Length: 224
Length: 256
Image: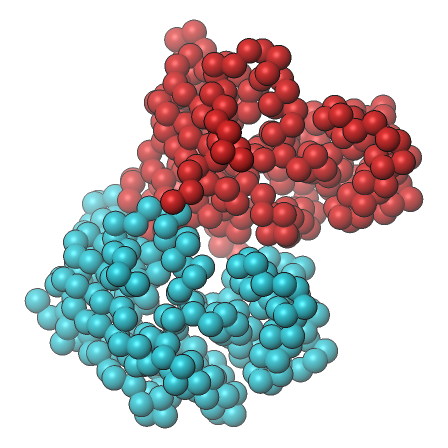
């Protein structure tokens, strides 16, 4: 379960006349195991910020974010690293990789980093590449040369390859055609059926309906 | 909770009246990559030179804890310190010419490091050197060539091989991709990253290139005027910097 409790978040931009931007005041919600929560609201309202606060990339001003009975806000850097490795999958909006590394290696990496053996990691990654409908002649190429939709699916594969209890998804179905969107929707459903707590940003009504999400409307939650 | 591999407390070093670094405290855990960023003159190099034994700090504590054995780095005899540096630490210089002997063959450079930690069997040394040439993607047939015949990127990869072959516990890297062409940089970066993952290396890397830090480092510290002004997870410091100077640094990066 993920619990977001009385969270305040603001940004102070020192180099822009110390402008202070308040993003959240007293934000509260929770996500149960097996539940898919969709964050809703216009762009700029802080949907991605919520995912980043939970992942520990953004520091919160006040409140608590509890995962595995641990409060992200008070953990040390190495404790957050450990929690990410064992518990939290994060699919960012855009794929960030170094040139020269093949798609297959990009996907295998999270498994190898947690000590899985090469053979096992290879088999799992190949299966996921097939499930995701990525053509075989691309597997050994760097994803930097891929189309937007293909990069997106590699990014998803990297986030989905491990069995982790929490998943944060930043627009996983954007830039995909309808067939590939359905493939991703089914993968997300399968994760949810296995009890994973999922928080996502889904721009299209279709994905939200298919995934049977619980919507959190940030227009209402952040009215202060 | 595992204990840190390296714990630094209130480390200070001045050059006459000029502050090198001041009151630095930090810790590093096994398998972590720590990035140090900051402008020229901020004390990055002074700090890693103190930590790696190249410089004697004025004050502070440096404790290494390797296999549950604590070494009080600033309190041991000179000979113990030399031995510790030889066996447990490694230093990759920005300019590979500073870390290699250019009039000794590539294999000789690597072999020398092995001999310094007690390897004597010529056949073993040569086969290990060959294996490492391969690991850093240098054609094995070049083992008897002098490094002066190597390109800049190859020299840097050779220096990396030389440093890693003895399985050091902490590896210091000072701008390891700084002097290389962009295309060569990517290859060296990729090599460092795959070695870090494969061998679970513990690394302290100095760079002024935030992209390098983002790709390689788990944690980072930002230095200014000899002090640490901000520290934390790399993605956190880069995406949600809390200090004015760090915000300036992050917002000054050009995106292509």
